[in-house]
Image (cartoon, rainbow, N blue to C red; front, side, top):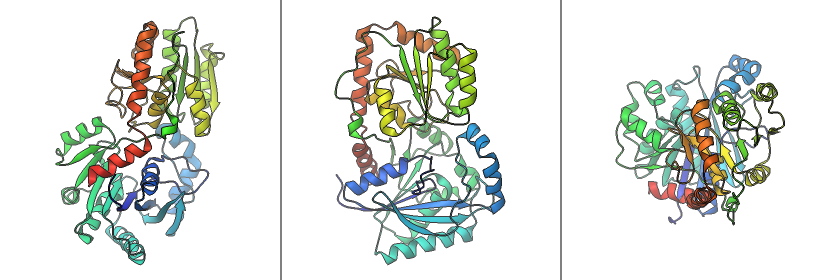
Amino acid sequence: MADKKNILLLTSIYPMNDPLYDGTMICHFFAREWVKQGHNVRVVHFMSLFPRPYYWVGHLLGGYIASKTGCITYSRPSRHCLRYKVEDVPVLYVPVKKYIPHRNFSKSSVQESFSWVCRELEAENFVPDVVTGHFPLPQLEMLYLFKHRYQSVKTCMVLHDEGSQILTAYPGQFKKYMDAIDVWGFRSRVFKSQFEETFFAPTKSFICYSGIPGSYLSQSDKNLTRGIHKFVFVGDLIQRKNVDVIMKALHNAFPSHDFEFHVVGSGAEESRLRNMAIQMQMSSQIVFHGKKKRNEVQQIVEQSDCFVMVSYREAFGLVYLEAMAKGCITVGLKGQGIDGVIIDGVNGFLCATDQVEDLADVLKKIRSLHTDQLQSISQKARETVMNLTDENAAEHYLNSIL
């Protein structure tokens, strides 16, 4: 483990002690684990602050936007800088004025926000050893500013996609900002490869995999002697998750409907999916659980044989790891974030596309496997996740920067 460090994490997505918050917890899981490991951590949450009419539209069309993209639309973000803690992690919430979504902030807004953060850190005598950012806007520019303020600081930029937004957000300036990055992190091998095709191969980089609590690892082998019949999906019920594709593929692979499909989650697609189950005469096979707490999800997954999620634009997906930790035969989509963790046919399966026919073929293959083959894949899934606990993932992240 690294010596105690002062770590500054910059992000545009972070929980806000809001019970209605439904965004990713990835950055918080890393920060929380570093705190547990004895490091001195500060999170800076840069929130895009748009003119008020944007939020009126978000309030009216939030459900539609969520169904299409999965993006959260905030209706009343605070317009003032705040200081609070999420669990034991100190957070500086900094709203940054912005006028056009997916474009850069004004220079004055960035500089004003940067100066406020620096004053806060100086008041605490906090001099960062490491500054790491997630998502380019405005983190890439902020990393550049921190690198010039603290000459010896190590800077890291973690991308949750291939990085194409950098070109549109920072035209004419992206090379200058990118030169200030010491280490590049990528949420998947696929994103790293795509980034290198567009930009360059970084001198120093790593794959920034997430982890899961060690307690989620099943302590015994899953019993698959009766074959694969109980399937599960966990996630938001939005279009890009392709839950309808899973339903159709199961209908194709199990024409006699000798299966159960447990759908855990809620979202704008739920009503359509329920109606679809009725139309396909699979109401008794498909169970919609709605949204569940994380410990309740674990129980449902543990009782299942196979986890299936063939969503696109998936940066990584902790639910894959959680399913593998329980010994589930796990199916993901080739070319997405889990590709590289799941090795097709070894510790799980990768579907070639998100089309019904391809997924049905994978499910038929799984159904045809001998018990010994299923048990081997299940065991290798658990062995894979043993190295991807929260503690190991956070330690790997920090050691890759230092």
